[in-house]
Length: 131
Figure 1 (tube, rainbow, N blue to C red):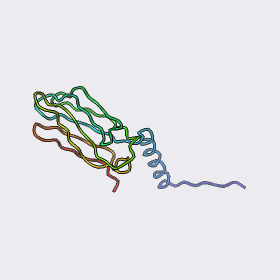
Figure 2 (figure 1 turned 90 degrees about the vertical axis):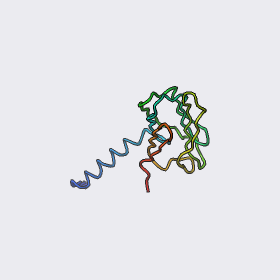
Figure 3 (figure 1 turned 60 degrees about the vertical axis):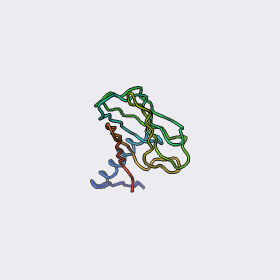
Figure 4 (figure 1 turned 180 degrees about the vertical axis):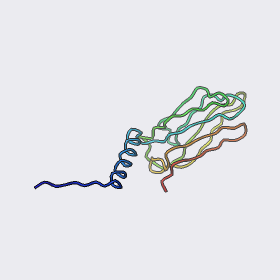
């Protein structure tokens, strides 16, 4: 006896959407994508993004004024609750170290962080929070 499988357009669309989303997230691993945009008047140096557990880091030697960099922060070894730590040097000034956001049980709560560094402030925008 043969079993007939019928997939209507609605179910096919849902299946395709599931496959596309699965493929997009399959290679990422545990961590968070981020971008750092330097909107200040001067270059920033020794830029480092890590977590409060200091397991992995992403480092950029220099980000020129009005430039933007992007990367993925690996959090495979993170196991506890913590925050993200952004460090950098402004020319002629002391090192800036600032904590942002929150992750729990070693895992991010969102998909992406966008940082914007200005002359007198640092903005953070967390995207893809699943609640």
